[in-house]
Amino acid sequence: MSAAPKTETFVQPEAKGSLIPYLALDGAAKASAFYQKAFGATEVARMPGADDGRLIHCHLHLNGHSLMLSDPFPEHGHPHVAPAGYTLTLIVDDIEPWWKRAVDAGATVVMPYARQFWGDIYGQLRDPFGVVWALNQPGTP
Image (tube, rainbow, N blue to C red; front, side):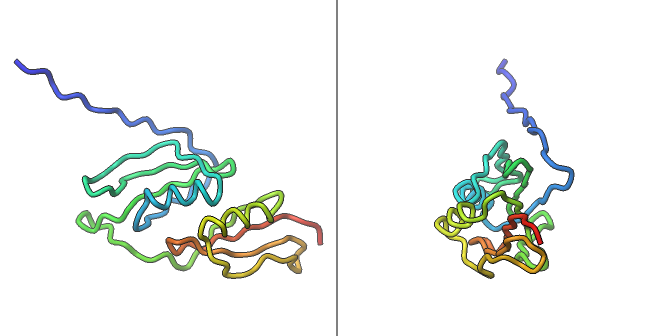
């Protein structure tokens, strides 16, 4: 009699924040690597979903909050849809090093950062997966 196959139990790490973006991106594993390099994220969980490298789930901690990713799975009713209609805003204490690290990693400038009429220093970047990120350094009016 043969032993039953061993299976890994997935343990979901702590979700940080009360509103967690969950992005379906074409290339979630590559996006995780990019967010680690560009924004200092830490990957805390990964659930592979297919032999072709796609991920069912990827959980990152980024600047004290959770960000979750997955690949599209059109064969299960979840086709790829290009990012549109939203911006992820990252609040930082000092925008310059965050901006430089993201641009050096491959983000493109959408709106250069500058002091805005509301007093904050704000700018926008687009990551290689099409997601627009706003970096915002709070200031005083």
